[in-house]
Image 1 (tube, protein in one colour):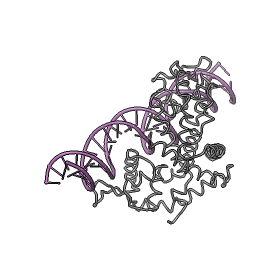
Image 2 (cartoon, chains in turn brown, green, purple, blue; image 1 turned 60 degrees about the horizontal axis):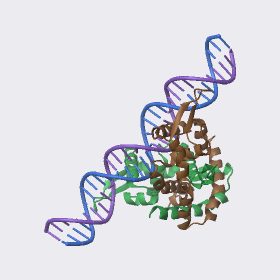
Image 3 (spheres, helix red, strand yellow; image 1 turned 120 degrees about the horizontal axis):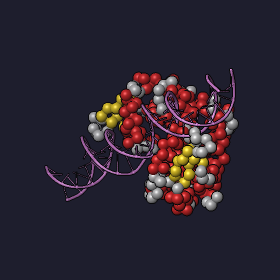
Image 4 (cartoon, protein in one colour; image 1 turned 180 degrees about the vertical axis):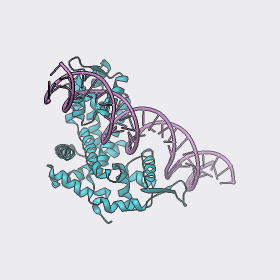
Length: 150
Length: 150
DNA sequence: TTTTAATACATCGTGTACGATATATTAAAA
DNA sequence: TTTTAATATATCGTACACGATGTATTAAAA
């Protein structure tokens, strides 16, 4: 092996890529029942936390661009989870609001995260180790954000 | 807030999702020069490690399905990075091999991972903290894999 | 040996991601 | 106040991801 830094097994990035894909895959069976996807679930969580947000708030919180979020919201509106109405104050903005159906999902999905967390722990990683990941990932995300904004 | 477990900021999964997207984004400027993408880079790393692999080896190592990898390899062939030839021994299989161009990229890209790692460290996370992520992520990936295979 | 099952890929449809660009509206500058 | 710049969102094109299904080939069973 000429360059060990080019070996897949040595790379943190590949682990993050894999971990992210696998964990969203583990959510999928829970979402299927409600006909939503992981990014749609992220939007719903934001709106459950606080309803009637403008799109730029959503793109900022999710670290996504409008070219991802706009079509995502259009699909969610078509499915009857949200409505997208123009703001009176500034008609460039759109207010995103939950429908009754979107609101009802909160109660229905409240057990999903803990249920999944329990399954992960049952399969060989401690809560302590999972907790350790959080502050390091926060620091990592912060550092990478700085790298990307030069 | 009715259900704190439904809060975005409390979720490990969202951090992984964000970290993975941002770190592949930080690779992109390096790839642009060579006209490749992050998943294509993963395939190249596998082939630099060992050339002439069958597709199932690639899907296993990358934890991806054939419906992702086949089109990926087709694009890479069109770009002249690899060739996809049917196996003599078992004509269901395809042998994936680097072209001269694909081989030359190894030398050209050998500094990319270290260069990026340096940039990340320069932006506020220690090598020690990055190293700590690796074994926990390995354990996490292992646990999630078990969850997904039930 | 013929039938059946398993394996290895490929194709199709849908939903993200994201660079690049366009459009409408508001704010700032001349 | 007219021009110009900034803001907020939308659209387009390309490349993944992945569930579902199809096809060719080989291996196993009857």
